[in-house]
Length: 100
Image (cartoon, rainbow, N blue to C red; front, side):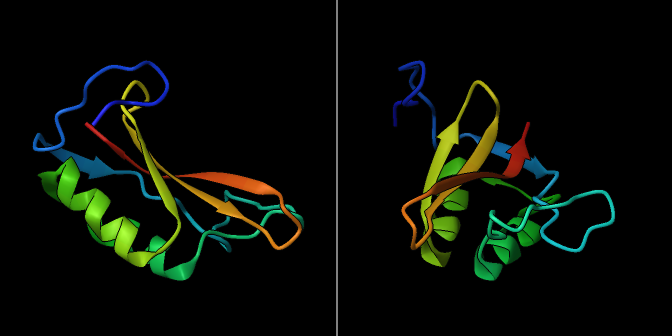
């Protein structure tokens, strides 16, 4: 897979450790304005389940894609992002989880 931003090849079979999942709504240190929907619960659940696990990027992407949304790997940030469109045509991008 090529990273869309910098055209760098990414080894999806590489085993990485996942950490820092998206906190979702209701976390005391995180606030979403009313115009920004929270990430879907199914995707948030995948991020929570991956936290602390070591597995391939390919497997993690497969799990996120099964949950919903457009998922993108951004290797220079070492994150997996979710992109969703609202009914009003707005696009929101969430960093769902980081990896190292």
